[in-house]
Length: 109
Image 1 (cartoon, rainbow, N blue to C red):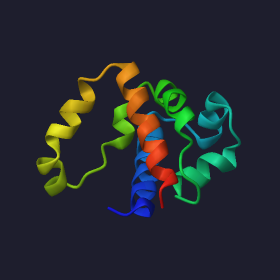
Image 2 (image 1 turned 90 degrees about the vertical axis):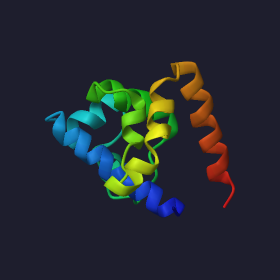
Image 3 (image 1 turned 30 degrees about the horizontal axis):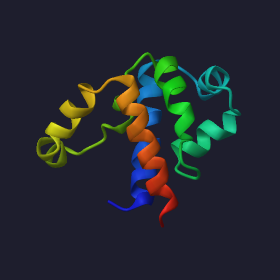
C-alpha cells in the first residue's frame, strides 16, 4: 500500500467513524482543537492526520485509537486479522511507541 493510499484510507475511515458517532466536522474540530477545514483535509487526504491528535480523535469518537486504522477490504481483513488482534491487545504506551515509529517511517520517503 502506498502512503497516499494509507492517508486516503485513514481519511475515509475517520469520516465513517465520525458519521457513526453523529458528529459534525465542526464538533470534531472543536473537540480535537483544530480548524474545521483541517478535519475536511484529513478526511479527503489532502493532509495526513496529525499523529498527536489520534488519541483526541479516538476520545471524541468514543473508540479505541486502533479503530482508525481498521480499513481493510474483506479479503485483506481476513489476511490481516492477526494484526487487528495484535493492536487490540496493546496498551496505550505500546500504541504510543507504534505511532512514533509510524511517524519516523513517514519521514522516509
